[in-house]
Amino acid sequence: MRCGILGWKRMLRCAFTAMSICFAVSASCQVPDTVLLEQLTWDEVRDAIASGKTTIIIPTGGTEQNGPHMALGKHNVRVTANAQTIARRLGNALVAPVMAYVPEGRIDPPEGHMRFAGTISLPDAVFRQVLEYAARSLKQHGFRDIVLIGDSGPNQPGQTAVATMLNAEWMKSRVRVHAIEGYYRGSDNEEAAVLRRHGVRQTDIGGHADVVDTSLMMAVDPRMVRMAKLQAADGSNGVSGDPRRSSPEIGRALTESIVTRTVGLIRKATAAR
Image (tube, rainbow, N blue to C red; front, side):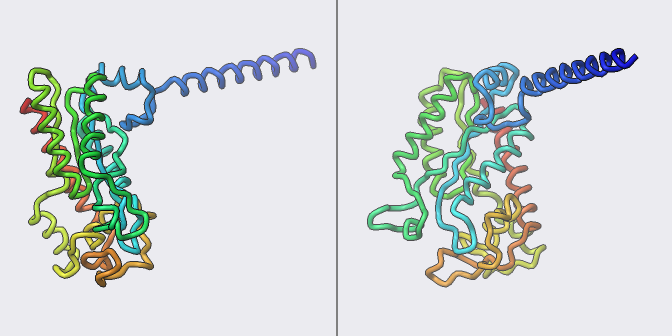
């Protein structure tokens, strides 16, 4: 009887081990729930394109100073997060790796953000060429709509120029490049309405590391903001405006506006081919 019981236990252990192996193999074969190109294998990308995911978003960010209170990677973290949300809402899109190095001003002697430690700047011509060859690569793999969204002002002219050049060259093909400037430049009235609802004063609004910029970052990743260091512009700290009224609530409202607007602009652009 004892031998019989031991035999059954061995059989159960074997069965359990076999089931565990099957589950592990099955899990390892599943395509991850991601729209990020860099998290997929080459054959997963191939299959995604074949199944209809023929739109690819190239987000451009920047590595620059953002005052004493906000980390240098603000643009990169923010645009990557927003691009993922946009891609999921579109339903037929993937997101290429963020371009983290963009034009930030002259290096020597330094100007603009380059006057602050940690900023990395590219000449505009280099930025445009990297963007161009990223787009050419993605076209080669079968993407039909290549969407450029930039989280920083200096990125916009280069994106527009690259889109214009490639669309002229590819006129007889089915591939188009769309520079969506409306991702960055939205409706002033829309933004003002959100800020008024949260008691933000006009004097709090600047052009960099202000209440808008900081709130947007807090909504995406609050770890990037040093709350104890929030301070108004003083002419030398890299801030324009006053971030001290920033909040995740403001950031979430502004982010939703950006994402909704951009999804609409992309759908309109891709439908007009």
